[in-house]
Image 1 (cartoon, rainbow, N blue to C red):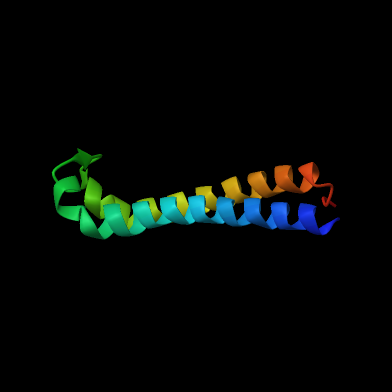
Image 2: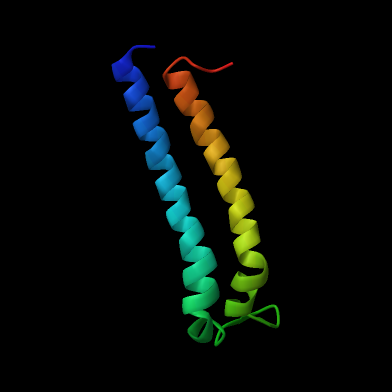
Amino acid sequence: MSDKNLQEYWRKNVRYLLILLFFWFLVSFVFGIFLVEPLNQIRIGGFKLGFWFAQQGSIYVFVILIFVYMNWMNKLDKEYDVDE
């Protein structure tokens, strides 16, 4: 892989990481901590939405983000011919 391709590959990788970290921050900190009071006005299945995000929602989203990252990286590896 040439230096230019390697730099492009890592630039896209870092972009993917920043996008996913943004969503992780949004769900875990913004929804679970900063906006917990307004979200607690909404109830889903008998539980307050803010409480759900703080306790379980952030975990579910984190696991989903792992699979999204895996999918994106597999596509990126194939694009730059560095897949296994």
